[in-house]
Every structure is written in C-alpha cells, then in structure tokens.
Length: 319
Ligand code: UDP
Ligand code: MG
Image (cartoon, rainbow, N blue to C red; front, side, top):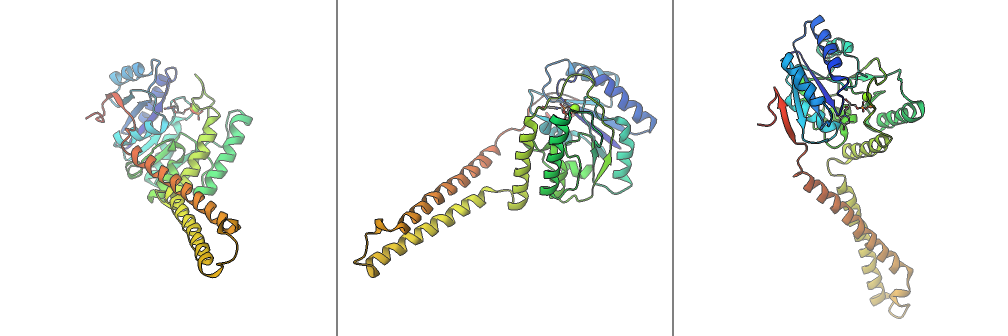
C-alpha cells in the first residue's frame, strides 16, 4: 500500500463525509493504493456513526474509537501503530488541511529522499492576537531549542516515511514536536512544504490559549530530555547530592577547626560559616528530593495505560 492517511478527530461530525469524499477523489485521480484511518479520540457527537457508515461503503476506510478523549497525541500514536502504508500522512479532520497537497507530499518522501515533511501554513486565516502572534513566538522558541528548522511545528498536515512512525513514541502532549522526536530518534532528513490553510468551516477549535502554555512546557521538557537524556531529574538529584556534600564537608571542617585549631575561639554557632553549611545541606536535601520525586513519577507512569480502544473497524489493535 502506498499511502496511509491518519486523521485524529474529536467531535467533527459536520466535516467527515466531505473530507472523506475529497480525499477519495484525490486518491482516485492519482491512482494511489491507500487507506484512510479515522482515529476518533472519544467523540460524543455522531462522528463514530459517520465513520462506520463510510466504512460500509468504502473498504479503504478504517477506524479506531477511544473510550474517552485521550488527546491528539494519543490518537496519532494509536494511528501510527495501526497503519501499513509506505508513506503516512497525518491531517486534521476539520477541512483546514487540503487533501490536494497529498500527492506532492508523497512525492517528496518517495522521490526526494525526505523522511518527514511538515506542512507550513504560511498564510493563515486565524486571529492575529490569539493565534498568529503567539504561534510565531512559539515556533521561534521551538526552532531555537530543538535545532529543527521548521516554521510551523503545529501544522496537522505532515508526511512520514513508514520507518519514522514505527520508531517514535508520541507520548503526553508531544504531537507538536513529532519532527523533534523524529530527529532525536535519528531521522534527520526533515523537510517543509508550504501548504494552503483554510479557515475552519464547521465547529470550533479544540485547543484554547492553554495550548501555548502546554506547548512551552512540552518544549522545555523535550529540550531537557535531549540535553540530559531520559532522566532530567538525575541532574537535580546529582546537584542536590553535590550541594549536600559541600555543606557537610564545610561543617566537618568547622568542627575540626573548633576542636584542634580554634580551641579557645568563638562558639561554632557564632560563626556565619556554620549557617552557610547548614543551608547548603538543607537545600541539597531538597534538590535531591525533587530529583527523586521526578524519578518516582517516571517510574510509576510506565505502568499507566496510554489509551483505551473501545471499538475498531478494519484494524487489529484490540487483539
Ligand atoms: N483533536 C483530537 N483530540 C483532541 C483535540 C483535537 O483528535 O483532544 C483533533 C481535532 O478534531 C482536529 C485536530 O485534532 O481534527 C486539530 O484540532 P483543532 O482543529 O481543534 O486545532 P487547531 O486547528 O485549532 O490547531
Ligand atoms: Mg483546526
């Protein structure tokens, strides 16, 4: 199969049929062998019903239904597990991404040697204050910290070589940083293509202003992870131990000084150095505990289930 199109969605009942028909017309015009995988991230509207109906008419339609809303990253992760095409396309369900871009994206992966191509919505039809400006700032920060030179990290329309999606883990809220995850995994041929951006036709955005706060926190996390390995809290732990040892060493020195050298001098508690060493030991212990807490969080999170699939059409994640 040449193409797998993965579409994460949450309550997009109004656009699904239109989107499906549009994709199919592009696939047929270009004679692609394809599958369309709708990943319903816990919709409460008629989305899943519509996907089921589409699959009855078109056997290339596949579906995964989450038990509840787990987030776009989880939806993409489940989708990546289930697809089998040579090239994987991700796109949003709200008709903001144009299926006509798919043939060229496919071409860039198969013929131009790219492992990942990210859409760049150069011209956007969104609010300048609430979306365009924060998003510019955000993309600048993402470029600076990750070293991945993309203009538009958040664009839902992307194309991947098969190996890329099978070798990365899209956890937490990392869907914005898949190119960074890919780069960290060793896939360095990352490209960009200017794509059209449509204004949302139906419904409204599922991400509010908190996307930028989440986005920056994720960015910080990903930067830390790429700098300090998978265990950034080791840094805090080690810093804590170091600080404690310095304080402890200092206290011992003061004790020896008191016992043997400064015998008839001031009381140890009268010397400011004593308090400095105490403070160092306290801060050191706290830093160590912070690192340890991080360790606990990571270790216990491993057991946590990522997402729960309640129903599926033509895929085999439940087995
Ligand atoms: N989406 C999802 N799970 C969520 C939130 C959003 O699968 O928890 C889907 C949504 O249905 C859409 C895509 O992710 O297909 C992008 O969302 P949206 O259009 O709201 O984001 P924006 O275009 O405003 O960045
Ligand atoms: Mg959208």
